[in-house]
Length: 226
Image 1 (spheres, helix red, strand yellow):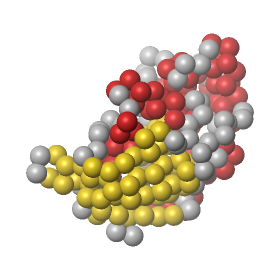
Image 2 (image 1 turned 180 degrees about the horizontal axis):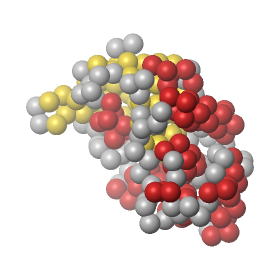
Image 3 (image 1 turned 90 degrees about the vertical axis):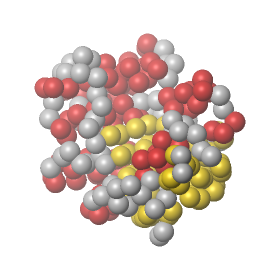
Image 4 (image 1 turned 120 degrees about the horizontal axis):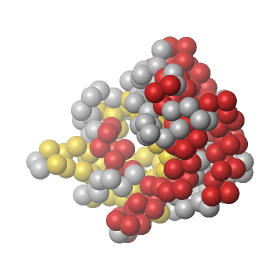
């Protein structure tokens, strides 16, 4: 599978501020992630990590500052175009997998490609190829409740990559897995990031998860402190 050529910068945050009422959650975030770069984001609960992810994918608008994904400045986009960016340029991997329980493994991945506007023949071919790449070609027809946690996360990783994003947001991707399975998932993310030049912003509380990353940054009280 050949991914389309991306910008040399996958994500750029400049002076990002976000408040809820009188509470300043993000207090001036500057961050640049290059193409294919993996960055770990650590910090205590309540430091603003989840809000930052929501701003990056356009679920939350920022009060001040700029969020640029690929070459798209999110501040200039209407809701329809924001949704297009989320579906086409950003992939997501969650701690709790978020697979649709009534769809098979194949259909979960295919559905993401369908939302991104791929034709039936193209998406079927890509799903087959990527599911083989993540080691799940023998489980295509299985439903999420018949898969192990590691298998569900492999399906989720395929779903995150199927539409050829510039950036993957991985929010505690090993949090529901045992140590050995979590290590395998991390190795898979690293391998796929290298192969497809996809950037990863990995939110984690686990120092072991940072071993696949090029940089580790720490967030505290709405600021990047290291």
